[in-house]
Amino acid sequence: MGFFNKIFGGSSNENTATLIKEDAFLVDVRSPSEFAGGHVKGSVNISLGQVQNSLSKFKGKDQIVVFCRSGNRSGHAKSILEQNGFTNVTNGGTWQKVNAMITKK
Image 1 (cartoon, helix red, strand yellow):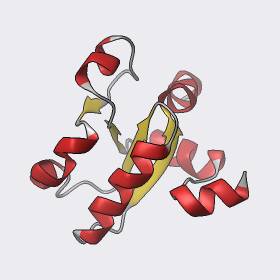
Image 2 (cartoon, rainbow, N blue to C red):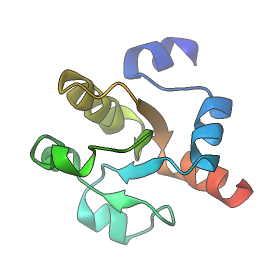
Image 3 (cartoon, rainbow, N blue to C red):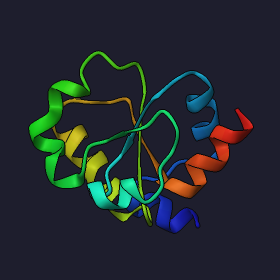
Image 4 (cartoon, rainbow, N blue to C red):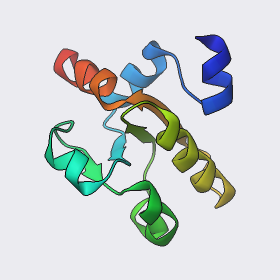
């Protein structure tokens, strides 16, 4: 798993859980139809294709956790945000993983 975390920018479960407990900005980068089919309570839906055009929505957030179906799109979203100067972005991986952490919050 460490290999994939390095490639896709994933974080440890502990780190992500801590960020969630500290009220990180939770961003689901799946499509609106995927989001409508089930999502993390309290998350916002900014699909991967809209991240670049929605940078203002990320400004001023202490911590940002991005996630998707598999962790791939959220890895891309993390890269886009980092290329635009955001240093506080964590790839949470799958939305189910983040959702499980919310229920333990």
